[in-house]
Amino acid sequence: SSGINAEWPLRPGKYGLLFHSSYIGRAKAKNKGRISRYLANKCSIASRIDCFSESISSVFGEKMQEQVEERLHFYESGDLPRKNVDVMQEAMTEAMNALEKKEEPAAEEKPKKKKEKKG
Image (cartoon, rainbow, N blue to C red; front, side, top):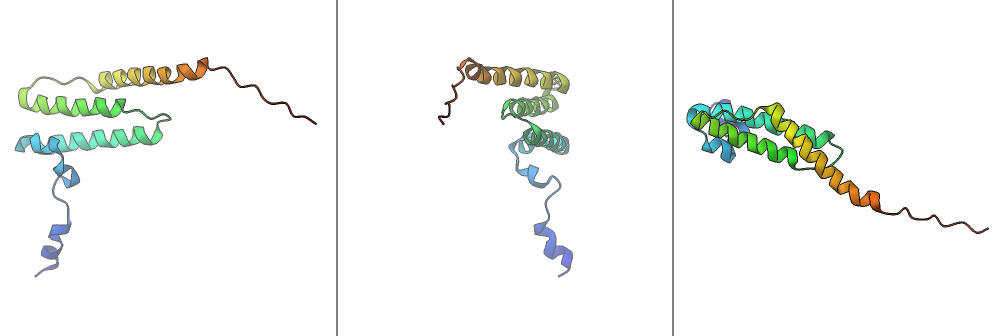
């Protein structure tokens, strides 16, 4: 047998690991490539947000998941999905509101008095 056939099972398919995603499975054959690229882009953006964000939040991931769902619906029905800039602005607003709610109780606490050194 040739070396190519021996290596074939080790190489990922056309869509790589994303092929196993339920989003790809739900898409029609003609849209599998389109939704896999869209999903890969959203995963890339989400990983960058996770890496560079100063606070932990699931808001952006949830919004991007909604966008993937909307894109699948668009491929099936033709209903236009929301624009990315609008969704990300909405996510920023929600994330900032959540961050402010977390910081409010800390701001209300009285600062502890420092103990004076005897000596």
